[in-house]
Length: 183
Image 1: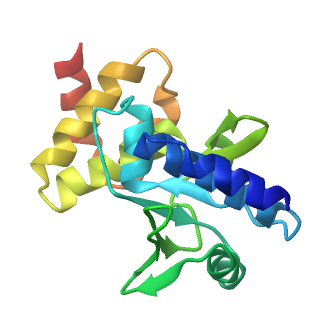
Image 2 (image 1 turned 135 degrees about the vertical axis):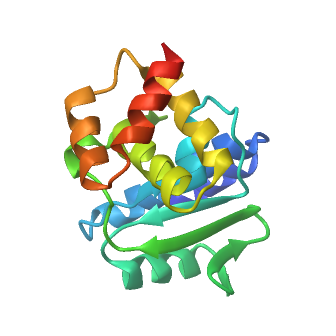
């Protein structure tokens, strides 16, 4: 009954990003009893940290317990379409690209939405994700988004951690160049 209330409330949220974020909080609440904590990564995380400057259509989640997450998505009316789980009534698509976070679980950002919580990859680990795409895939868009994230959060970033991760990923030269450009 409680989840029916949440889902009805969700349907009244017109803004797609807010609707996706609220859905992840509902999903997280439902999975809490199984000790499963889905974490938003990818484009939806970028949309959160850029305050909507970046826009995406789907939600990428990482979490152990993929089988339980999929069962819960089915309970919520989602259908498998290719690599996505989609609910046409809610207009929400979800992909679960991995079970493990490429980053530090202690750096996850928690967002409270009307008493529910959604979890998002930490800013430094999202920067590393975009920086890797910039350097290793030669994605100019990801170079731009790396710079944007650094501009937005340069005073909040744990630079010691970020620099160490960039060294591990062999992206340190590009990180330092982008940081210098952002100053």
